[in-house]
Length: 280
Image (cartoon, rainbow, N blue to C red; front, side, top):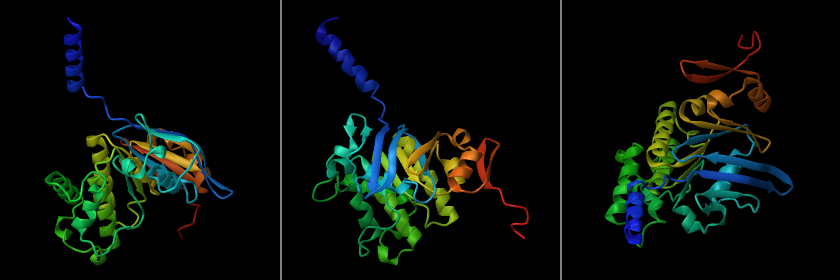
């Protein structure tokens, strides 16, 4: 085989077997508000296709870590790599092509319609106006979040839960490689909490996205997330599948409440241990 033929064969194999999507690698990330240290040398890996829950009590560093990964907060300590790129060193527009962030509350003009707000997710990828390709992606995100009937409604006419679903649809329209969600289900009723977590898990799995969700509900995290990470005092103290990472003694120490961890029919659940007569 000649050198030219060998190179052609190698190229054909590369097309037939594309490289797997890159996961997220976080090393040595620290952050402080003034003298108050919030994150202390966080190391974490989230594989492509994985939905990872960031758990911990208020003040443990969940939202701060999410905002650092999104570029909302800046730190000079540590690295966050997606393949060969350090997200902390990327320019905002380039980072927006691969990282989507869903904050706790709406940050879009309320005079926009739902469709216009979701279209904002295409901004890093498109020129002066959306192409048919952009429009198709936007419509798919709207359908996926159950917003089709609300597409022409203005955000000012929506409930808090509906507005939160618009933010998630906008993030999906970005077609990110990293999806960050900061307590996205806090304003949703139980049905939409479950549906939203199912959608995010499906998107991560089907599109090879590394997804991180800051969440308080330990049982939702165990049900929908392949990986759970527990933060306490700015340090990572547990990491893995819920069935392995949930330890009753550790959770009790972190949350200041005695709990029991149950493993039944392939499901892991956490329940508080209440003193006798506490519900009387």
